[in-house]
Image (cartoon, rainbow, N blue to C red; front, side):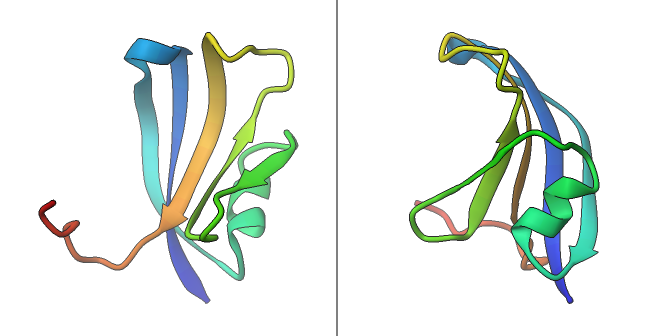
Length: 78
């Protein structure tokens, strides 16, 4: 089982808020997101993150559950 950081994001695209963050164990990003929502899942090109976005929202106002692979380490500085 892999670990994924899952959080709920919402708000206008320029100022998203994130709440309900937790670490979950699942076999895939799809499985981790399906535990939170039945919304359609869209994965990133590299497959290291995905979101289940409310199909009733737009590009300007988002409501979604977001998941990313969790390594247990802080992200590298850019």
